[in-house]
Length: 251
Image (tube, rainbow, N blue to C red):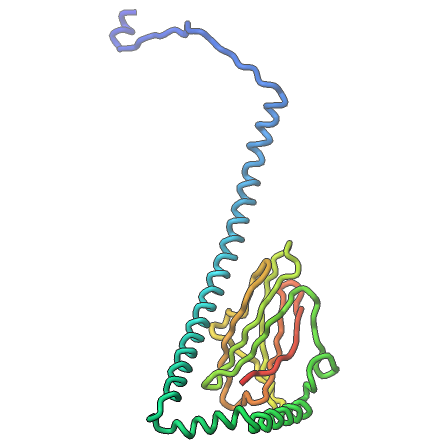
């Protein structure tokens, strides 16, 4: 005892009260199952968070495109407003010439030009290998119903550019739809030119319900956009081609 005291060892006996707890077997198995399912639940939640993050990134990109289109429209509206104010002033050089041209455009000359454009479009359609729209042997229409395409606008821009806007709607809301939108230009003479968008991945989409896609392409100078058409194709990653149709290019 003295030797232990010299070493500084203090002996303590466990003479305190003891307590015991009883746990039912069903509660025990329930706790085991709960802690066993926790990793699976965490994995599912992580996957859902990743899906929401992808949709949020897509929505933000669409919002940025909408803002750019809105700014472009506002700038065009301001230029037209300034042009209208110049026409109202009396001392502007060339005002009378502009007014005469506008009057011609709004009168009989507009009807003549409309008839001439209709005849030219019919002649271009007759000479084009695609004929008068889809649904025939040279150009079969494809619509599997997996995606709904609406509000398609193909408009020519300055500098031989082309702007394509369309709405993509997933018909199966319980499943995510992923794929690519591609376009091919068909001129009035029958020449075909696959279009490259800027940026290149702007045609890729991953949607659960709806997406507005706006794509801009630079057409080579040897291809004319007068009376041209655009073949629009939607390809799904798993099923391949699910939609194809043709639309006229607006000037």
